[in-house]
Length: 181
Image (tube, rainbow, N blue to C red; front, side, top):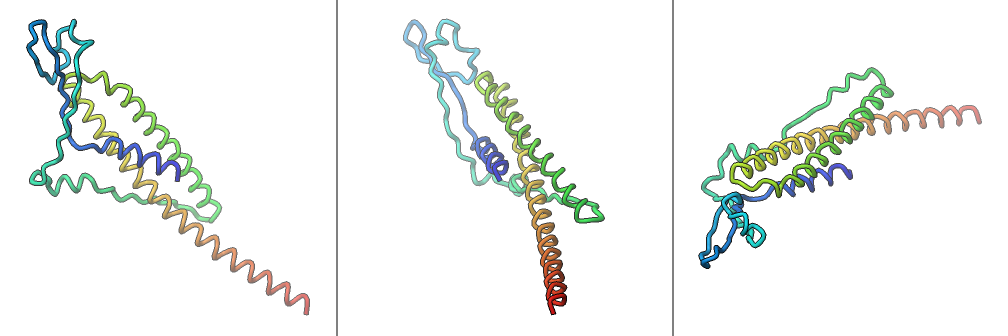
């Protein structure tokens, strides 16, 4: 559950609407300049430069079916191929370890990307950052689909185990009653 919360937080952190970043600086003559490229700011002005982020909400007219399909969580199913309940339990434990590792890897990628975020100054670098973020979000969605499928398998396994245990307990109690008579 902690992994799901962590991944959801990562996902929502990167699911931001479009924004534009620009810089404002004033030259020696008092002229004010705006630029999207930090490299265009004179070196002697960079310590005084002000960074601005302008929020741009997505336009409704540009929302397409393809965009909404991209937001959907893909379907994912596990095929345990287990002959016994013990094998199924072991397979589920193996999947749990893999999902835990995947969650850690996704978190580390997010942290790494966040560290690099300030280094992306030019429009080209911001575009690269956005591409990396989009790829990470896609991986998070796939992880969420795997986690959902895993939870479904665990619930089905638990139902089978509960039913088997209830059956065994009933059988044991019947045998105990028959012996006491």
